Amino acid sequence: APTQSLKGKKVTITAGPTREALDPVRYLSNHSSGKMGFAIAAAAARAGADVTLIAGPVRLDTPAGVQRVDVVSTNDMLKAAEQAADDCDLFIAAAAVVDFRPAVIATQKIKKEDGNDSDALTLVKNPDIVATIAARVERRPFVVGFAAETEKVVEHAAQKLARKNLDMIIANDVSNPEGGFNSDRNEVMVIDHSGQQPLPAALKTELAAELVALIAARAFPHN
Ligand code: PMT
Image (cartoon, rainbow, N blue to C red; front, top):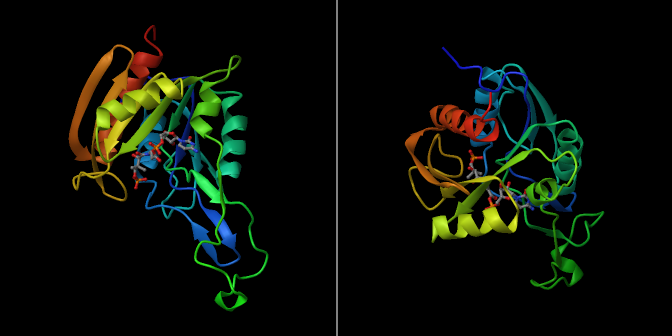
């Protein structure tokens, strides 16, 4: 039987990629399918939580009992996250947020005949959503991030945990063919200030239930 470890808790989850328009027909994005974040949303709802799922552009059905907010750009995801975090106990950032966006979005399709050079694209840095939520002094939820890494996975994830002021980080070796972007499976290392715990390769749906149980125990130890 599913435990009710998150009964009465408000949980916000970001999932999927963000997408940054260059012009009316082109964009910058990444290979996130949303599967990991949606699986966590489903598991949190089964654990009794009141779940808000902030989803970038993905092709997935909304899990049962989950309130979904669809967004496209990073700034839209930030806005939705800030609003949800105002009334939230636990914030889990599974989204693969695009770190840079075009400085200007061309109103018309960019033409190669217009003399555009190959280096004509100027990028600006996007806001960091999970770090913005974790930097709150008032109304700060328990904040869990992911770290998508291709080398020195634990070291780099631990640096992100500290730099973004998170309570917990889920290190994801995205060079592992057994998991990562768009796979149905994943294998992670959970890191917090008390240590590390590996979660072996499993379906994202199964892994999500284990993650939710682990996060609930750390975030709400007196429940
Ligand atoms: O969606 P799937 O296909 O199922 O794949 C799952 C996944 C690989 C996308 C997921 O498990 C994962 O690792 N998500 C984080 C991807 C990522 O972009 O990680 P990062 O190391 O760049 O970012 C670290 C953390 O900061 C993440 O929690 C991210 O959501 C957050 N972030 C990053 C940049 C930014 N501007 N805002 C953020 O909130």
